[in-house]
Length: 265
Picture 1 (cartoon, rainbow, N blue to C red):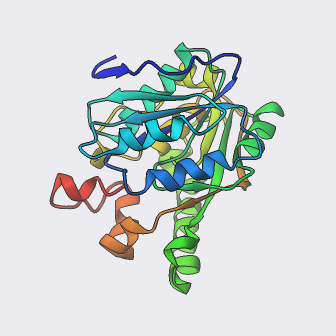
Picture 2 (cartoon, rainbow, N blue to C red):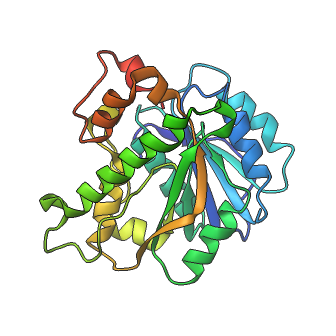
C-alpha cells in the first residue's frame, strides 16, 4: 500500500470492531476525541489512528493515550495527504489484521458515549452500512444559526442529493442517504466488495459520498441512523463561512486558494 506503514502496537486479539480515526496535525484536538472513545459504554473495539503525515505531536498524544485504556490502540502511518486516503489505509489495515466490522470518526469529533454500542446493534441486525447523525460540538459554543440553520441547509442538500439524477441511476440498489465521513460504520465484506474509500485529494471530492455510492451499487442494506450521534467541529464553517462551506460540500464548487486551507478538517 503506497506510503503506508504501521507502528508495533497491541495485537487485535478477538476484537471484531475497529474504529478508524484519520488525523493530520490534530495534537490540539485529538485528545478530546480519544477521551470520548474512552467513555464508550461498549469498549470491545480496537482503535486504529491513521497519522496522515502530521508535523506536530499528534502521534505522541495517541501513544500516551494508548497506555491508559483497556482496548488496543494502533498507529498507522499514511504519507499521502488526504482524508479519504488515510481512511482507506486505516480500514484496509484493520481488515488485514482481523476486523470484520469497521467504524470511522474524525480527530476533531466527539462520538456520543453509546456510539459504538449503537453501531454494533445496527450491524448486528444485518445492515451493511450505517450512516449516523452529525451535530455541532457543544464545547465550541455553537450559535443558534450554527445549531439549527446550517444543519438544516445540510439536510436540504441531502434531499437534493437523493433526487439528483446522478444519484438515481439504475445500478443503485438502495436510496441515497445523508452520510458523514466522521460518523459511519460498515462491514469489512462490503468495504472490500465495493472498492472502499476513494484515495483522492481532499479538494477533489467527498470521499464519504463516493463510498456511499459505491456501496449502493452492492447492497440494499444501508440505513440512516439518527441515534448514532457524533458531535463535529465547527472550525471549517467558522473559517470559511456558511456559503463557502456549503459550496465545498456541494461537489467542491468552492475550493480554498491554498492547500493549507483545504486541510482544515
